[in-house]
Length: 222
Image (cartoon, rainbow, N blue to C red; front, side, top):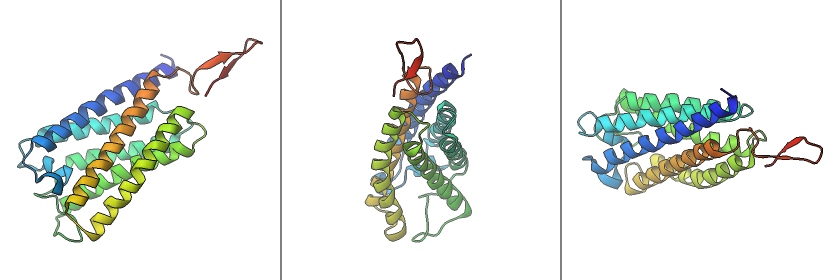
């Protein structure tokens, strides 16, 4: 199988896994007994929640999509692929380690070791994906389409991430933190879906469609 075809297949499966994962997590969050917009998305995965299984299945599906997307990227963007791989590992850890009821986080709430591991893994996973956007944005090995999608994703994600960080440190559990967390996760998911979809349907060549010059040679068109 040609390398380009393998990357396209990986991108297509990344889109499928991401769609399935986001759907499962959304169902668990919306239908579960959580506190609504004042709570964390992770609260849908606590042991006592009737939708914990759906939540964890969704999280693991998202992790698989990150690994597949890392494999779908062109060889010249290894740093971005490595960040997505790290994000996948952190996502698996986030799904495997369940936080206690309410998923408390410092500095405003008393926490357990599991809460810290779960919260740290969740933050690390999101941060790794946002950093991958920035790496792709400035990488000459990524084609124009990938860079444009990364530029839009980073422009939306960075200010929201700043709000999330400030709310965690200065406000704690609140509607501001709950809403901003959901917005950030939505931006990350849309970026992943747009990038994997683009990589799945573009030309088999790494640099985009090629055109034939008068002398018979092929030149990539970006």
